[in-house]
Image (cartoon, helix red, strand yellow):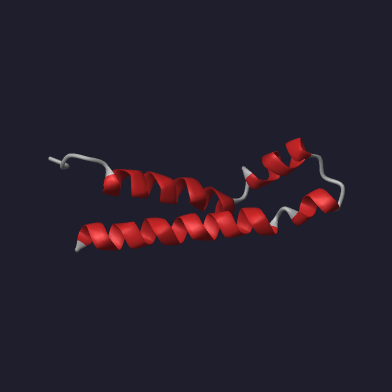
Length: 67
């Protein structure tokens, strides 16, 4: 049950972070360079949830058991 909840949490965090990254793509049309865009999204907490979600999913779906 904990694995299912953790997997759902990881999927939710990944989708939340990825959707904000896509939403912030509008900054490129406003004159930001790609470097400034990457610097901006790397400083936003809602974009960093993508990394947290990937880490949770990696832990949940890896082979082997946690001892």
